[in-house]
Image (cartoon, rainbow, N blue to C red; front, side, top):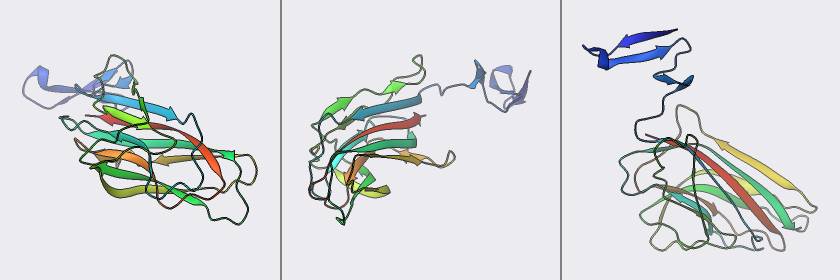
Length: 206
């Protein structure tokens, strides 16, 4: 059963709401925006991240199209960090940050293709996603606020670390046209240890 919320003076301006509170329901789910939708993108390194990697090295980036008429809202970012070559005990861990950027698009590395959660929806305007085990080129890129940080653990035996940044559903990370998010080292990475990472980013556009 559904009910109608009258938002105008003619039938075409009525807004449908089902018994679960979903607006404009299709197939039991809230209808996708007329332009936009829900998306993910995933990537991973194919080689180890070197030991003693410099601070402010960009390893992954996703930039929203500078020509988009929509906004992107990032709801979740997952990454798994695994050890390549173990480090030494009592060495200070490195720090990896999720950071905003704008103005230019990083280059190099491996480009990734976003997934449309509903393949009938609009193509994403997150038009450039890429990653590297070494460093993306960031000529003219302007870096902004750090959204979140995590230690890159000092592994003295084999192991891995799973991290998930989850942004409140009502307060996702908003990207305007030309904005982006990147994974970027915040300090020098530890000596001797090498590591690898993968990631999945979730967002919607409207």
